[in-house]
Length: 282
Image 1 (cartoon, rainbow, N blue to C red):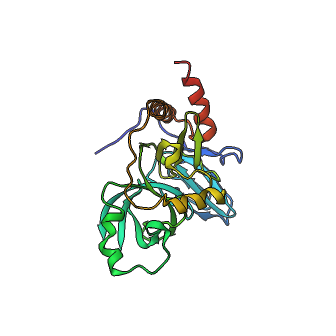
Image 2 (cartoon, one colour; image 1 turned 60 degrees about the vertical axis):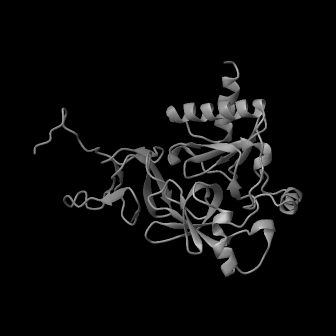
């Protein structure tokens, strides 16, 4: 089968400018030797002239870490890094662990030893805890967690030991491309109308009323109060009905996130709050 293009494609004659971070497939990233090939790149061996060329294999943003060069594609499945904040959904309960969908190539693993027991009890996990796993988390439950370990096959292990993580209830989840989520110091935000948001780096965004999420990561008094009240545990609680005004604020914020994502705007607290204020005119 013959495949032809309307116009013949020519390779760029020069390297990508240092100030330019976006490349398309086939762009020469660098001709210098000594660089390490990362994901989204390959070394050209077409003749002696281009022997040391490092060329982009996908379209995306060039990331340089010392001598390592990689290209982050604009649209791809989530590839976790240790410390990432995630929002996931329980898909299966197994022996001493849960399988969690995190919008990645493989499901993440949440071990029984990596969760806080109801009431914050600190002790070894027993066979009774294993038999009660489905009472803590069952299929379909949403959780917030943090990446703990990465494995060679691309899978990851997550944990919910911190009080700011745990089971999510009383809200809605929005799915966007993981490449649109901006990496920040904190991914827990509060917006007008009493709406709290978790910007999961895996592309899952959780929206709920403020009392459903521990927003502050540094307020020890707040976390102590949450611990004493049993919040962020896996006990079933009667959430009741959400009032009309918070429900409308959640719906408006959800529509803002979807509109920004549809236009390729990077999602972080500043861009979302600007979009939220602009939507108040309509």
